[in-house]
Length: 254
DNA sequence: ATGGCTTGAGTGTCAAGA
Image (cartoon, rainbow, N blue to C red):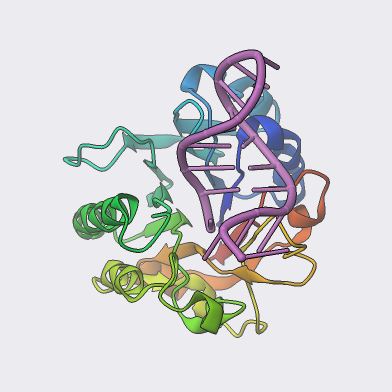
């Protein structure tokens, strides 16, 4: 089973890249973040023609998450149950007995801001829900843009980013809390190149200089971690014309 | 140097991203 996640920063703009990437990589499921469209504007027909169904939790202008998948899905869930939130950041479904969750964690803007408080409250709500999902599903994968670089090795310049947004200690502790009940960062199951990142700022030629952060993750339950054979970041789409600022992350499972 | 790009909204230029 091949699972992937990609923050596309507008599905409308990036649809040609997504269609091409699906054809080249043929994942069983691709989780998307920042589709930035209401459900009415979602390109269901174009994706169907590419061989994929879609579950979307859409929102105009901002946010919006989806799961593109092959086969039959059941138990589609939108938003974090019991958490009041007008931002569309979660969609989940069950595919072939595997529970898949696509998440777009709030950015937080600045440490100490209202948006930062929202980010931490949101992560606490996600934590509570994922603990419950782990009791329901042995095979659980949580994929998405977490907007947190877990460790200094996930940051191109740790000194410059120290205690800044995406790298602050409370954010890293919140991510560790998500992992605590039994989720594993699939990327770190394997030897990886140094300076591996999944996002690069559009400005200042950051991609060309590989000045990025690793903030897009695939978290696996114990059964899936045991079945995982590789986890990689595909930088190829970041080199295209008009790219997303994020690259896809892919996990191969038995 | 708190900038630099890119998006959506909407037709000025701002909010938001990370």
